[in-house]
Image (cartoon, rainbow, N blue to C red; front, side):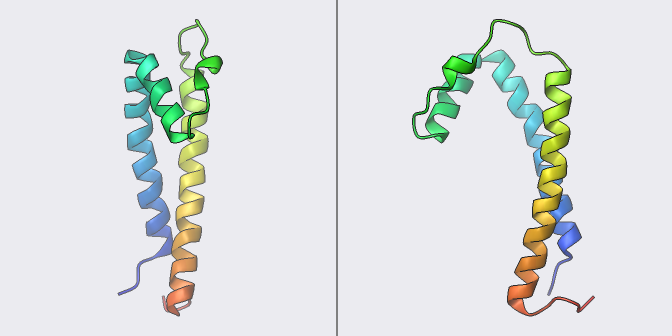
Length: 93
C-alpha cells in the first residue's frame, strides 16, 4: 500500500506544529534544562553563550515556527516521494 508524499509531508509538518510550542513552553519554564538538552544534542557545544536576559517575544516564536512547519512539509513530501521512488511506486496515483 503506497502513501501519498503530500500526506507524509503533512504528517511531519503537523508533528512539528505540535512539538515546537511544547518545546518552547518547556524552554520558557526551564531555560537552563533546555540549554543542557541542546548541549547534549549537539555533542557538547555550549549553547549557554547564546542565552540573553531578554524575555521571549511572540515574534521570536512565530517566525521560526512558520519556517520549521513549512520546511517540515517540504522535507516530508520530498521524503515520501523518494521513498515511493525507491519502492517503484511513483506515478501510480
